[in-house]
Image (cartoon, rainbow, N blue to C red; front, top):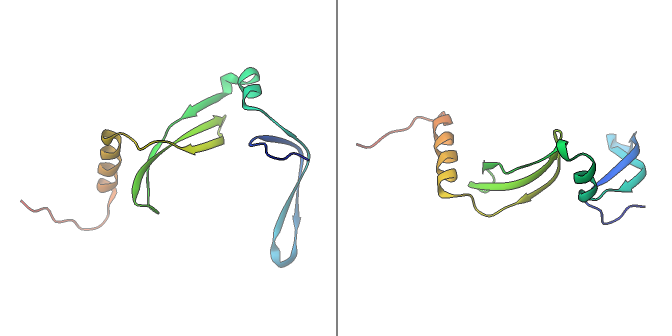
Length: 106
């Protein structure tokens, strides 16, 4: 049994229909993987991205650090507040996308 590993690989994945249309996913032949191992073996396919985005739930501009293997996000963590320039750009883009009528006071 793999416990307390942020990354793992499963040799077999089974989906089973449970009660009340609940889907149960069973993993077997599972082993933990260390990030260092990925960096040693598939480093050309790993990349780090730091997207800055508007979070509509908190109504704030936020940033995160993503460790990505091909198109799969392996790890995502919130990072410090984005720079004022990045926040201004995101808010300006969001304002341009706004479909509500806006009044400008001269």
